[in-house]
Length: 198
View: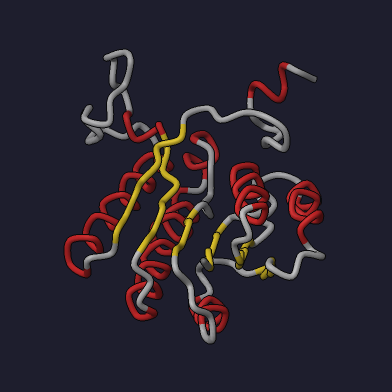
């Protein structure tokens, strides 16, 4: 099985790659190594995989349609795991256009590439922020997600809806994962749990 992972140098992506490689899967990793946090941390996350013949790494922004298409060409991709995104609620308030370009525009480009390339399975990394001001606890996947409280949340919800549309129109199997506060080794340095343990 050949798996294409966007945002693979991040916390969640690097753990997924580690697991899939241990299962003998071929991994194509794309990451822009943006400066949301130190790119050297992300490079360190994937450094252990660089000598593995089943792993390839491409430093590409998902908004770069030509580069993304070039990576897809000649590959037999079975599944895409889309984890690349601009993250964080507060930064999205300061840079809403950037969040839209990456999280919505980048997702549409990737979905189109999957459609044209015949990829039939996509896992989309969404966020618990789509629940907005929901006061019901615990949350349920059936709770309302129609009142986002930040551009970040709105872009993640838009990504879910785009995935749903491509599923309904083109028959692509889609699974959207609404991550809450994920923690552990290699987590982002801006996360509260990382800060508390320092």
